[in-house]
Length: 112
Ligand code: 5GP
Ligand code: ZN
Image 1 (tube, rainbow, N blue to C red):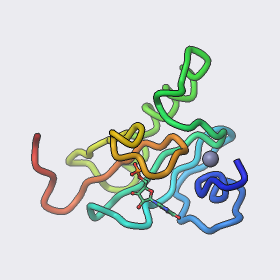
Image 2 (image 1 turned 180 degrees about the horizontal axis):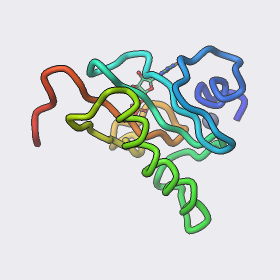
Image 3 (image 1 turned 180 degrees about the vertical axis):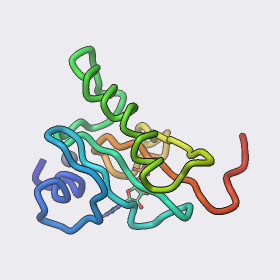
């Protein structure tokens, strides 16, 4: 998607503070962190949102879920972290390229 900001981070067209990359997944720090550590996990392939995923996306979704705790640990979030996937306008999604927020650190996060 030529006008997608996260696709542009994948290609390097715009900079991103990358923390992990493989053939299918990229992770980089959120530009507006809501916690001391806040990064995003995205598929390199443009997928609009969780609502657009199907059975063919099982592997990429599984990869991202399994990477979340691994990267959280590498980022020092040993006390725990929160994962959030905003889906659609009603879910507060602003960038329409699937992403998993992972954040935590500091004094910790309130429960809800
Ligand atoms: P959403 O509301 O779609 O779930 O979250 C989008 C996230 O992307 C926001 O937390 C926002 O700060 C982050 N974001 C938006 N544009 C950029 C950017 O150009 N670079 C980075 N690193 N993060 C971005
Ligand atoms: Zn994209």
